[in-house]
Image: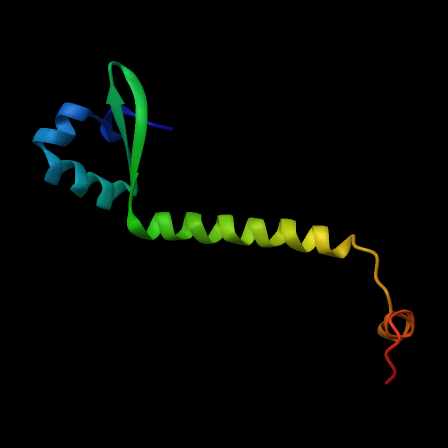
Length: 86
């Protein structure tokens, strides 16, 4: 959840870039506000890498779940149906 301590305006980012980046390094994430609305977040590179890895793992799990539900045909039956002999 974002708090005042980890929220910066776009103007802050423009004028105090180093301070904002220091806060990202300290907190791992800061939020950017424009016109009183949270518009974006800046995250630490290690946190981003962890998020990307978690997302890839999630996609792998979905792909695995789809593959497991496929009908399996024994190789011998496939060879017989397609005229190949072992």
